[in-house]
Length: 365
Image (cartoon, rainbow, N blue to C red; front, side, top):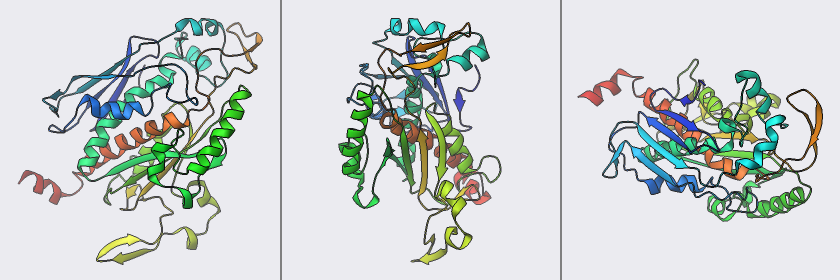
């Protein structure tokens, strides 16, 4: 299987299956001297682990990370950082029935067509548990970015059709909401909507919004590795994501140039923009404004209500999926989207260090 590594200078490789021994990541290209401890990475993993609220799978996993290499006396050594989370509560028998048919909305059929074989225990590599490695790698990336004064944070913007109101939103509310919504009124209404869908044996989707603050202008390569292109690839590689937009996104199609263009201005000797319809990126390069990205997350495909499908012999059947599944993926996907954004930003930032001769001379002299 190709395609398990992301990045050029800051590279993250994820490995493992949902019902295997464990899940992990190898981070290569992290500079030496970064303070890093297991408990720092654990804080990020705690935001995605299951069983924390009634809106996530009841599967209880501590998801405790172990750093196996690349760190000595609390600091990175510059060598590959290997991290592992051992699986503890697999119940593979919950999935034995699905070995013979294809679940709607899952990768069962496509894996069979590609490989002629699939790990039916929770989906194997296509399981949401694969994102553990992404979050572990993202934790390292975010710690590097923090040291550079760059901040990345994400939250649930919309859940089950209920969207936050900007006037009621505050960053402090994100941690107070079981759905990670910065508007607590919207969170309460979304919780009621989810309870209704759960009683119907159904699931829901939503939108994760991610903000990058403090990134200087000039990050991103102007052709194939545009900042927005790399961000879109990174976030779209998350299994539950079905769409990505930056800035005004699809609303730009209904705009006019006089409205959409962000006018430049000068404030206290600094060039900035009066608006941010472009979402902080112009020509594939950061412009110094906040980068604003949104990811559309599909409803959880595993639902208990009856669905139609076919078995491996091509016979049409009806199924009701048993097991421990999230009624909504969005809250646990928040830190995953944030992690992929952080990995992308750091990788392109490192690449940008060689963009000007003056910067290279300053570094080596």
